[in-house]
Length: 183
Picture 1 (cartoon, rainbow, N blue to C red):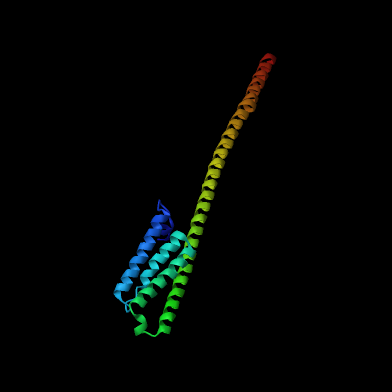
Picture 2: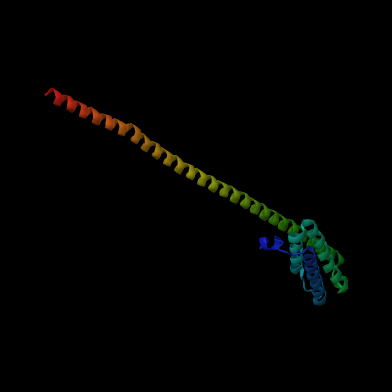
């Protein structure tokens, strides 16, 4: 999922910004319509995650503040201050903001680790391909050296041993002739 979120296969920054803004706006509207007793905080995490993946952690922090602010504005318009203690409201929004910032940090770390892993995979793949190429070159060199040694051995056999055999044959013939002449 991280790879799908972080790849930029033709996705323009305008489209990504439009998608995040539309999703955030739609969530704000649904949160306002659903009233103050239904929490959509979990769904606000989606545009935050998308923003971190597409624009980085700084933009993710900005969207986190915007989402918490939008949720707070919807609750204020919905009349939350008449029904709940204001200190509890501010405390809950502060907790929401902290949770969003923690999520931004965690997701940013996850994306960074994923990118490091991809880079290491590419480096090791390149090293493996280089080692395979070097192995093929060494194998070819070994085959060439073996063929040269075989040829040298054959040439040595031909030049030295064949001449020795011919010389031995002539010596035997000479000794036979000497025996015949003497006898």
